[in-house]
Length: 308
Image (tube, rainbow, N blue to C red; front, side, top):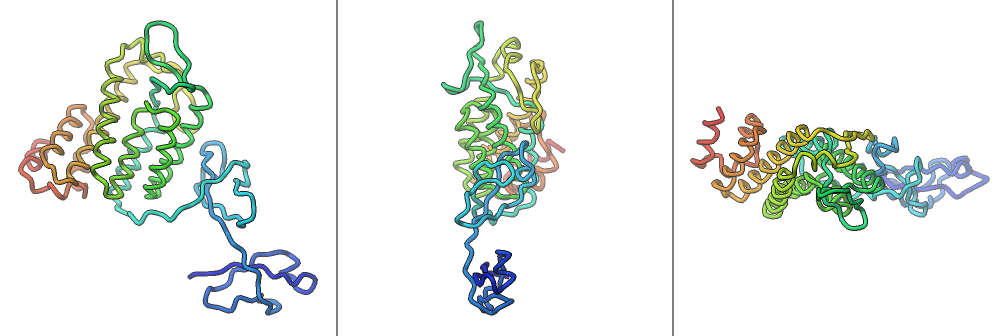
C-alpha cells in the first residue's frame, strides 16, 4: 500500500502537532491530520544504509535507515555518511543467490591474500620478495566493503553488491577474488560477456600469485578472517590451498558466463580447469540454470557423465 507522510503544523491546538510526530496516510486518502482535520505539511524521506560493517550494529543488521530529507544524511549510531538505498534488483534466481552468497562469504570467512598494492597504500617489505602489505586503514576499509557486498549478495541485491566490491578494487587493484564478485553481480544482470573478462582476470591474478615462493607468501601481513578478526603469519601451505579454491571458483564463474553465451567448448574447458583444482560442486552443476543453454551439448553431457 502506497502512503504519504506528513506533519501537523497546528501547534498549540493539536497534540500530534505538539509532539511533531510524523503521520502516515494512505496515498488515496485525504492528506489531513487525523486529529484536527487540517492539511498536513508533507515530509520527504531519504532512505540509506550504514556500510560500517563490523563496527556499527545498524550496518551489521543491514536494515534501511529513514531520515527526513533536510536532516544530515548520516548514520544515527556512528555518525558516518549513509549509502543511499537504490531500487533493489528484480533478479531473484534462488540457485544463483545460493551460489554467489557462498562465494562471497569465502572472502570474509577465510584469510584474504594481499600482494602488490597501489602506490600510496603500500609499505615495502625488506628483501627480494615483491609481495607488499597494505596500510591498516586501507585494510579496514576494504574489509568493510567486502562485508557490505556479501550482505547485499545474500539479499540478492546484485548491482549494489557489485558497487561495494568495486570500492575494494579502488583501494587495492590486486585483491584476489574481488573481480569474481563483481563478475557475479554482472552475470546476475545478464551481462555474461563483461563477466567472463572479469573472471578470467581473477584467474590470471591468482595464477601469478601461485608462482610466489613460500617465504614470500608468508609475508603478506594482516589477513581478514571474518568480522573484525585479524590473523598474522598464515602458513604458505594454507594460503596455497585457499588460492586453489578461489581460482576454481573463478573458473566456475567463467564457465557459467561462457555457457550463457552458448559457447559450450569454452564453458566445458573452464569447468575442467575447476575440476583440476579439486573444487567443483557437481550437484550444483547439474541443476545450475546458467548452464541451461549448453545442457544438451555433447561436450557438456560427456563432462556430467565423467563427474558421475
